[in-house]
Length: 82
Image (cartoon, rainbow, N blue to C red; front, side, top):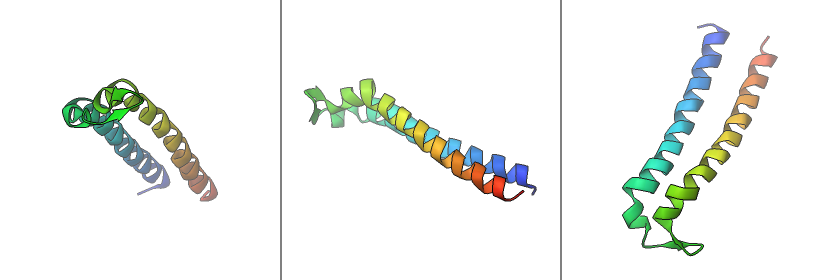
């Protein structure tokens, strides 16, 4: 396997993991587990509602920064291998 294949395979692995986390938070916490989470409150709102309205967005923004960090590390790794 050449360096380009390894680079893109790692990139796709990062994407799958990060998008799976986002899907779990937005769909799982915001929809599937909303009734269970609504027993708790955050800032005056039920937690299930909060995840559906705000939490998924916050997690998505955090995941963007995690992706930037991971890709910068990956780019540095492959840049040094030249």
